[in-house]
Image (cartoon, rainbow, N blue to C red):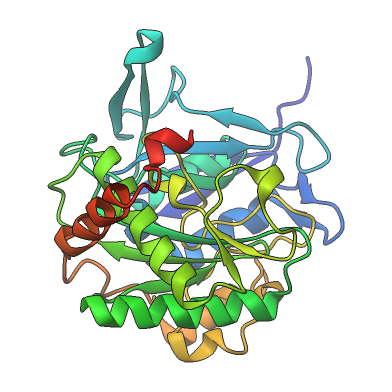
Length: 319
């Protein structure tokens, strides 16, 4: 008889999750195992649950660790524990639907890690109405030759525009070479209008920092040293790594909330599976107040109408 795979049981809030193959190495360059990943997500449990709470969530799975293939998984498989919650999202274009993970507790996150998930990519809407986003995402996406000093500088300009709008944004590293800023919005607009508002915002940042920023949609037409503000991350079914999500890169970097004061000197490479738990224990969740105020998009949509009247293409025309 073949020996059973080794496993451990992990206390994850209200549930115990069985973790199989806990010693499987996921990050070979660092020797980090599946169990290390479990312990990381437990350490930042409050933060990752807040970032994912009640959102449809795509899982980026690495069944054989980073040395193997990455699987983008939308559907929760059969055999999931009965306490795991899902939310159904539809894809009318393909006449299909998917029951996606809907995190409400840390045990859901640990179950996903047990299923070989490394990265968590949530929608910017919640299950109460998946067609009305409550999160506007400002993605500062550097082109290949864009220095990180430019990313920091543009983040400062983005903050100035937010301040002029009377809006509080919550920055985080992307876990890669960029920065994200998240804003809670009233869930009153569909994805199309949220994306129009995001493009109007991006264009205002571009007007204030024309040497640094591009909103040109086609990649081939962008300056390789510019920073692209990717407004399309607000489109339906577009997802990016959540706050506290580990990234599937050899350095095991983490998409990490930072303060605005930190942005001027931040180095995304400092935030990893090994360093973020201590930071979280010391500072808590820097996005803890993100749900306190939901902002409106009226002014941004007025800017969008102004831009469109002047002959600038809207986001639908840019696709």
